[in-house]
Image 1 (tube, rainbow, N blue to C red):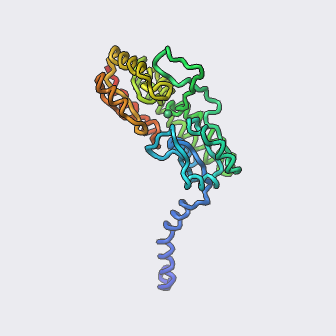
Image 2 (tube, helix red, strand yellow):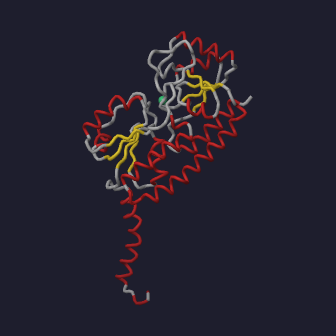
Image 3 (spheres, helix red, strand yellow):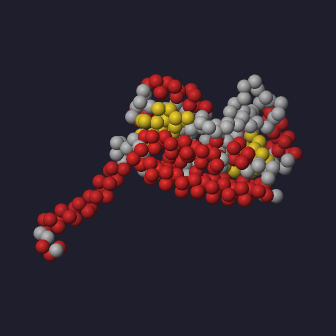
Length: 296
Ligand SMILES: [Zn+2]
């Protein structure tokens, strides 16, 4: 058949083949995909495991920014005006402006991701520092089994939004769930020899992780805030007594206090990131860092 093709029709066939990938990539970048907002990068990853590239997922906290203090940019405000859902996860900054965002964007539905998850108090080392109001720990995603609960919640809302993709979402959720179960099993087995071991962190991001795998998180920050000198003295005493040789920090926080303590104890500083986007890979990396640093 091809021998009957004229040069000009052949030209158009070649042209359409060449243009096809461009058209497709233009489509993937198009803004007519429904926009979803999340607070932190791991949430984007969870959504994309379930929905692949069905949605345009916008992360509120840019890479490297401290999630404690953040204001949406003008560009983010523009995206929010076209967004269907905001999946809140319980970060402190959300409570500062999420009601205002919802008022300004009547189409925006705020979805509570921790719904149905029992929140723990934010750990602090000293038992003498019980404040009248207990701060709840928002870092639920550091426990892979809680990520299954989070993802179920996401699945339910994505299905409400695009019911025609129900089977696709469901199937992807099942395979993501299996990867989380595999991760949990790996962490459980690998960290078993470290049972009840204390690890010192700057910001207490790993409370749910520690609880799941029977480790003790000790935080330099007090209830997620700068420590008092007296509390710091306690921490240094504690670290010396327990032969703690490593302080874990995360890249979004100022490290000067951790570095000063590290010099005093003395200890190494190791960075582990609870906000990395590729959640599964990152959790394997975190486990290996803990194992390497804490093994006796
Ligand atoms: Zn935090």
